[in-house]
Image 1 (cartoon, rainbow, N blue to C red):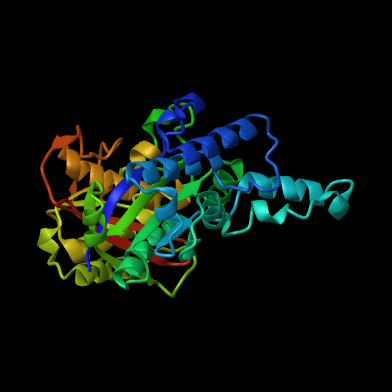
Image 2: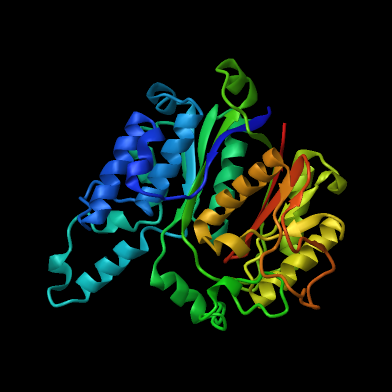
Length: 385
C-alpha cells in the first residue's frame, strides 16, 4: 500500500485577518482562538497547545486536501500529532496558582487539561470531529516526525485511509531555560542573533529555541486518486528506534540504525537518496554524533543541510516542518543551504555540506532525520511523484 502526502501546511501565524482562505469551520475556529488569545481569556473548553498556529495549519491542510466535515469525521480518518508536552504557559499559570497565597483552592477543575501531555492531539481531534485513531506522539524533538511516521504506518496497515499528522510548539521562556541549564543554548550571539544557530560550524555554541507548527495530510494512494486530491509527494519509508543507553547523550550508533531502518522499510539503496535534511541543532555533541552516523550509512556524497539554521529549533514541531521543507524542495527543485556555516567543525564527519546560496537542483528522494531526548531516533524517506 502506497501512502501519499496530499497536503501540508507549515507555521506562518500571520494576522487573524488573513484567515479567509481556511475552510469555514477551521476559519471560525482559528478566529475564535485568535480573539481569545488576544484577551488572555481562554475558556475551559479551549485548551490547545500553540492554539492559533496549530488550528491554522491544520485547517489549511484539511481545506487544501479537499476534505469536508464528513470525510474528517469518518472512522477511516485518524490523527497523529505531538508536542514536547502540553501548553507550557498554562503549566506556568498552574504552578504560580498552586504555590500562591490561595494554593489548591484557586485551581479550577479544568486546569490540568490545558497542559496534559496529549493536549495537542486530543484538542485537534475535538476541534475537527476526528473519530478514527488518535495517536499522541509526545517524544520531545522527535514528536512531529514520529507523528508522520506513525500516520504512514497506520495507513499502510489499513487501519485508516487518511491521517492528519504533525507537531506544534509554543514559545516559552521555560524551553530556553531547560536547554540553558544543560549548557546547550546559544549565548555568544545574543547581540548578533542573525549569526546563530550555526549547525556544524566551528563557531557554533548551541541551539536557538523557536516556535511553530506543521500539519501534513497523509492518504492512501488509490483513495486520494478516487477523489482527485492534489498529491504533493510520497512517504517512502520510516525508521524509528531507541538508543537504550542515555537520556541526553546522543548515540551515533542509534542514529545510524534509524537511517538503515528507513532505507530497509523503503527497499531502497542509499544512493537513491539525493538530499538529507539533518536534525542539526548546533549543539556540540549532537552535531558531531549526527554527522558520524550519516557518514556511516550514507557516505559523503549526499547534499546535507539543517533548515533549523533558518527556523531555529521548534522542538515538537520540527520533524513535521522539516518534512514539509523536503517536499517543497523537491517540488520547487532547490537545495536549502546551511545558514551561518562558515567553517565546518573539524570534528564533524566529512559530508557534502550545502554552503553559500540555495542551489537549483531537481531531485526525487529526500531523507529527514530527527533525534530526541530519551534516545528516540527517527528517519523519514520522502519522494516526489
